[in-house]
Length: 632
Image (tube, rainbow, N blue to C red; front, side, top):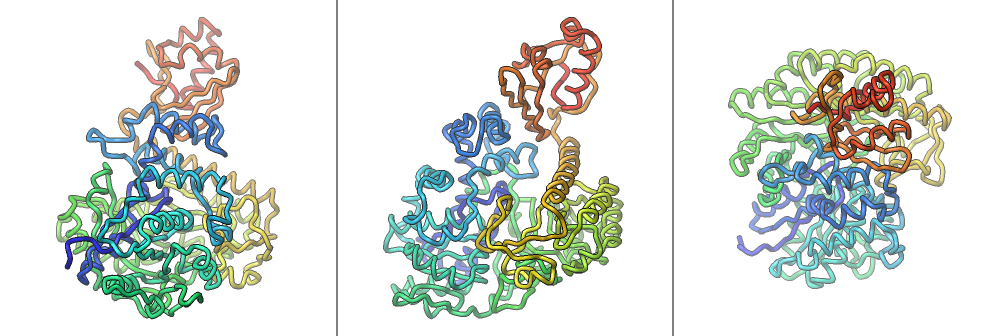
């Protein structure tokens, strides 16, 4: 194998949920190429984008309303002002970043990223010359590319650049990067791949390749064999992508889509080769290990992940022994003890075997995984997983309405969901539960009943994420919307949450009115916020503000280190960074608190002297409920 790198593998922005961890695509491909004698280097531009967000210039623009869509009183601006002031709290004692949702303030950087997300629509395929360059997120990514010196990112020895695009919001930045790399190195071949392209229809790929000439080829479905074939071509000073299975490219001015062959046997994959320099940047890095491709259930009608591996079986799992061998090797290489299993849903039999192996070998790690509600996940198995270091499971439970769950072919009904939640609590298993309040045909009353069911089991939940239902064209629901009570329409609704409009199917669900749906979303999100704030308070560090009654203390102060405060001249708007709360202090109370906004001490007697004992007690009670005050 040559010592000089022949391939550069790039993971582009923007996947804010991956800050603090590493999506495994480039690491898996780098190890695969190395196994076949081809050297590759990696560039994790997603982590670098998180670093860029913390630069003085970026924080200043976000904090002062210079970024379109980010007013100075917004949560994003508040997070920017706090991060600028408390930057040291985003790193550990060694200067490593505390990114990631599992750190107390890691979500701050995710908030800072939101204004720069680009949901790719049909315009993304048209080429940058046809786009309005005044669109701020595009300009921001161009500024990041300059900051990261991407013009000089391709080593002289590299002949092929592979850009991995698993998520929709990465598509436009990836295309901008392709243009940057091609301008700097016109002799290098630029290849894009990943799930974002696997879900595209051939006509969309045709348009992309015609209008983005910096892209020499696109890989769909499993990437190992196509990338290896293209790398071998450029090593031999050849370029004929039209004969590589799984590749789409312009051949003599005509787009050719070569059907894929089966992907590699997953147990033959080498241990991922993560870039050690990027790992060292993070205080608590989490590495990924592949458990499976596809879903062992594979029947949920709203899911399109089963479409990602054409040419291969819809589900391919790895042996528990292979996964544990990867974990041990990664621990040896990087000293890492935090892992996530890459899977759509961990099978119970695999979970049992891998947990027992971890225990038997005395492997001291924590890990997490996606899972679905399955009757085989009983208390005994969940307890075994906890003993093996499983920190939490992410559960796509979605709803509690049996009729709707059966309609979309979920594996569990209301009673099975309830059983699972109770047994997980008894086993000590933490659960991060995803809810979709408006699965197709859900009525207003059914949604409220579903919420009531979940609220009755609130003590079983560690985190709740709420997602509005949005059908994708590549799912069963997108292909046959009428079966599920949906009426297709021409345009994406204005309140769409889609991050990949190219695959979005616009529709109307008449089961709820617009007002009913908005009310349901508000109720579910309020419930999620209660769960998540309480969980954060329970796991915060020793300096986190707690709901401790400080009345009667000699002196106290506002918890200014955890607050962003905007004095509007009348009201005061506070963002509690730790509690993730927005508090508007009315003008009368603001007059009382204004002398203490810098952290100056005061007592309950001081407040009583100014506004009377009754008003002082009420104000202090409100401050306590908002966790805005600390004792000295």
